[in-house]
Each structure stands twice: as C-alpha cells, then as structure tokens.
Length: 301
Ligand code: AMP
Image (cartoon, rainbow, N blue to C red; front, side, top):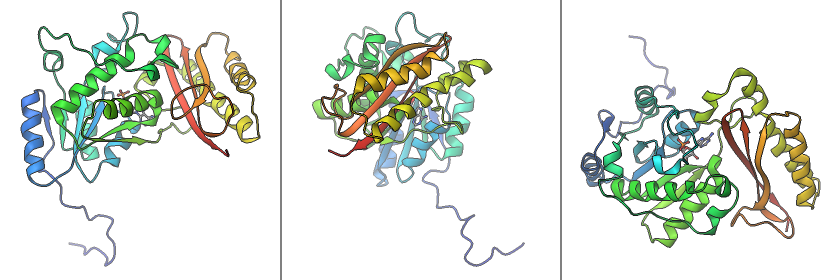
C-alpha cells in the first residue's frame, strides 16, 4: 500500500457521528433518533427543505457540519395557493436521500402528510405584518403555511439550531420573528445565496425553465445589480432605482414582474432615507415559473 505523504491531511476524515444516515417517516422515529444523538452530547441541527435538493440546500447541510444534522424533506401543501404549483412541484426523494448521504447528513425526515397534519387538524400559526409585503400579497396564505409547518417541524425535531437560506429573505425574517414571539428554544442561522455560475439563484423551480426561459431568467439578477450599482453610486431615490430595475426586466416582453422593491432589511418597510442595511428584492414570472432573488447592501448612515 502506498503510504500517505506526511502532512497530507486531505484524505483524513473526522469520525462520522453515526454509522449510517437513517431515513425515517414518523415523528416517533425522529424523536427517538434525536434523543439518542442528544444523549451522546451532540447539538441537533434541522435543515427544513421541500426536496429537489441542489447546491443551495447542500450549503445549509455543510453549515451545520458540527451538529447532528436532520434534513426534513416535505412538500408542504398549506404553503401553496390553489393556483400554484403544488401538484407539479418536483418530488425526487431517492435522489435527495443520496444527496443528503453524500453531504454528511445524519437523518432524513420525510414525513407522510398525516404526521404533519393529523386527522382533524385545524391549528395555524399566523405571522404578522412582515408577511404582508413583498411576496405576501402575491401568495395569500403562503407565510401562514410556512410558519405552521416550520413550527411543527421545530416541535417534532426539537433542534438547537435551524438553518435557512437568504434566498428566501422574507421567510427567514418571518421565522426569526416567530421564534422570538413564540419563545421557541432554538437559534436560527441564515446562510448566503448559492448561485449558478452566471448568477441565477439556485432553486428547485429552475428545473421547470425551458432553455429559452433559463437564459432570460438571469434578468432578475441583472436588475438587482443595476439597483446595487445605483445605490453604491449614491442613488437615493427608490422610485427611480426600481424603475431602472423594471427597465431591465422589460427587455423581455413576456416576463411579468410581481414586485421589485428596496426595503429596510430589518423590517421590510419602505425606507425614507436609503442608509444602513438595505434589502433589494424581486419576484418575476418566467413562463409558469415564479422566481425570487435578493441582495443585501450596507450603505453608510
Ligand atoms: P426549499 O426546499 O426551496 O423550501 O428551501 C429549503 C431551504 O433552502 C430554505 O431555507 C431556502 O431558503 C434554502 N435555499 C433554497 N435555495 C437556496 C439557495 N440558492 N441558496 C441558499 N439557500 C437556499
């Protein structure tokens, strides 16, 4: 056997936290597995997903590397409106489990509907005004569905920390608010947006794009950059900046804008003076596919 050169640690793996990744479907199984991990002194991390996993999701699994990592995979019906893409949302559970295993997850929780919404269920978690702006008006009930399922996942898994992506900036803020408001005993970590080489934010919905739509979809990211450039050059009129963003999208006659907004990154409110932490956010519809993206910019006060 060829000896490994001294000092080459590239192939030295830390000992794995469990012998193998389990895939479970019931709340009771998750609780037993998490209790066993906790009794071994491990921190418990939850990475909630709807599956069709990509490098964005993997970055969240990576970020939790020191913990016992539970990835939930559940396409939550209550966060989809009646005319949205619940039925056609990609469901790729076998490939997703392989991705999780490769990424070093310890447990995949892929529940049946009856575990999350038991017979007779009727309780919902309703977010406050943070949910009334940006995506809120275009997706009535969406954030109530998100809060409800995330609260349930927190109660089932009881993680010490949960990981979310900045890609869904409004969702991340709403979840942080929920955790504080409902005194939930865990930390929320928000991880940066992972992008394709051309800048398109990775999304499970990108798989719906035809090659032509995929090429045009990049206009949202270009519009964010236009706003960013104007802001860093001292632009101070939000209306003028969002008009410039709209002009970028308008190059593609058939792409519809849901919104293009510049708001306070802390509370999603319009800003009187553009200073401090700013969120530039947008949502567009390319064909039948709705895409969102955002950037955070810190401007001098
Ligand atoms: P989803 O499966 O779309 O519900 O996303 C599950 C989690 O992954 C959410 O916290 C998302 O914000 C996060 N996520 C999705 N896409 C990305 C991305 N491109 N970069 C970073 N995080 C992401």
